[in-house]
Length: 240
Image (cartoon, rainbow, N blue to C red; front, side):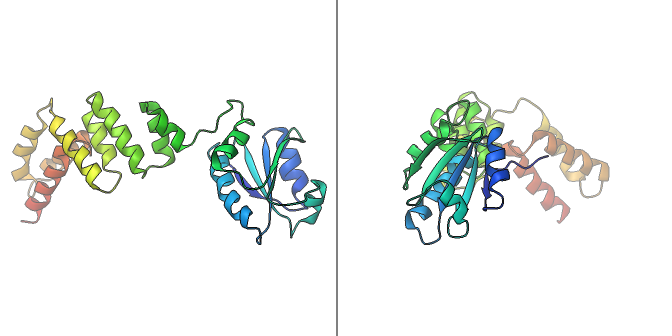
């Protein structure tokens, strides 16, 4: 699988290939900066975050002007940070100074076919299940996303799915509260508990019983609130 490229460091020697040639197929945003530039330190992380959210649909080319004076001269830069957007080998937009994130997002968004940079905050604001699942892929440990998605799942009574997702983050008070709510909603429609209760006394001495016990737990999955309980019971039986 090819790695998605979102941010690259560019030099005078690589500018032709990495910026001009690349811009013929993918919009490239050139960030002219320097280590001594305070506003550059503010703008740089914002550009990386916003352009990173495009998943390779826009590329950020970072240029240290002190080490690469030819590029700065080519753009006739008077002050930094200076940012230029190139598409099909030509400059199509530009700005100077450190802009706030929402303005950077709008600047980058104009370079994309969809006209929008989708990040976790945008997906979270949408609030539908598909958007929240996409946000979870981007930030699997984001508590806000986990809570929002679990709440949506519980609204359609997908209890085991909600419980499985809630296990991805630490049990803060908010998470624990939603876990308890989900457990209260859980109503099994199977006889797994009956089977497990029958197999439990046999798991220590009977390999086939132990195997079947584990198969049932795997079928139930981590989202089933009974799974952790029966795993503890089996451990207690094995080491009794």
